[in-house]
Image 1: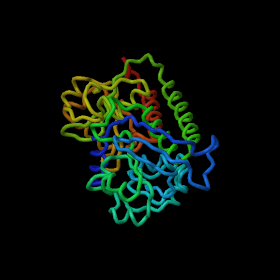
Image 2 (image 1 turned 90 degrees about the vertical axis):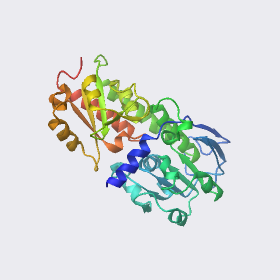
Image 3 (image 1 turned 60 degrees about the vertical axis):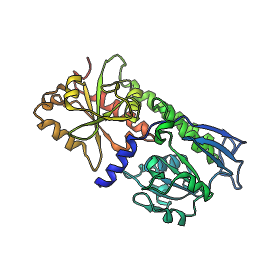
Image 4 (image 1 turned 30 degrees about the vertical axis):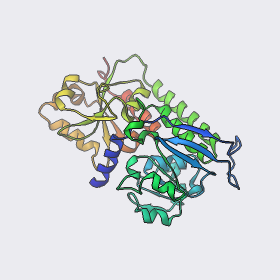
Length: 336
């Protein structure tokens, strides 16, 4: 599990958002989004600086990484999926039945030969490592084989990153994917639901507490924390709490425990992963000679969030809900 953890975590840290320009050349579906029996109109888009032309809504897509897979399933597109690969957690329960109908090509990234055996017409990935040496090959090579590609805006290479990831970037990705597959109305329904849930979650806090949150992702010698511009900050901003390390650049940044003590956060988010469980993080903090006396540690002001709920995808709303609910449950003293 550790190899998997390193790959997923590193790919997230080098990932950052991208504003994606999508221009549809004609309508692909009606407002009710019926599945078209015949190919729709072509779509042209620029994604992570890569021009992509899709002649018709893909029928044999392959998804790589959990966020991409679950966005497809949430849009009701399991019947357009020829394969999938690389989960970090069990699929969301509401999508489990649909997911079971999709061939799993590999536990991690499939070899390019394995990918091609599925005869895909489109490959959709969340992390740019999917199109790297350890993945299925670069996007230009796939385009040369007539296979379209899309990379999540949160996973674009550095030259194409926008300043700061927000939930609007996640919604833009959902719209892009729905447009490519000709189901735009499904995207709008999903986004409306998520907007309402995020608003309800944020409303659990009164908005008057000046709270500072340390988001601890991984690492004990040099802790990796949520910085200014990635998914952790996106979730904290949506809830309305402060980021203790929001002045650091990037999505995640390595810092020191001395700096954490100096910043004295009101609460600590513990990312819970099978390879780095929240329980182990709590135990480390409790036995550390300095950290055990940090008020947030001594007061057990922890919020545990599952790893997959910290990524930019349909689970982002779960991350927002988990953080809001956790902050609302904290004992007195979590705000100042």
